[in-house]
Length: 96
Image 1 (tube, rainbow, N blue to C red):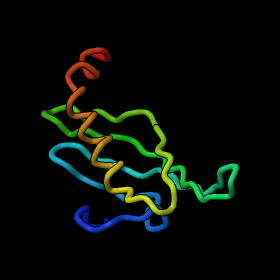
Image 2: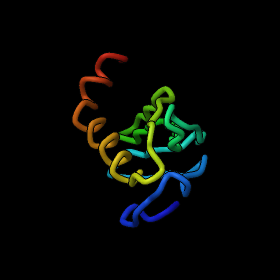
Image 3: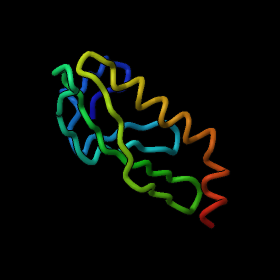
Image 4: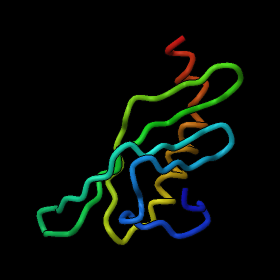
């Protein structure tokens, strides 16, 4: 795991990497590099959210982030986690 305080470029992200905030884990499942129509590198990062809250664990389906080579992936990861935490109660109540 790379410390989340560091700048995190997409080429440093690997399957199996995990990033944590509170009870939430952002787990990288797969990383693929491709290019857009202009030839710029784009990384497709497949991930899942794992929430170990209380006595139940929720594991999300796999989702994807699309990140260009110069971006800081950490900002995307933290936004995904923060958005999940904001919507957690509504999301989990829909599947119970």
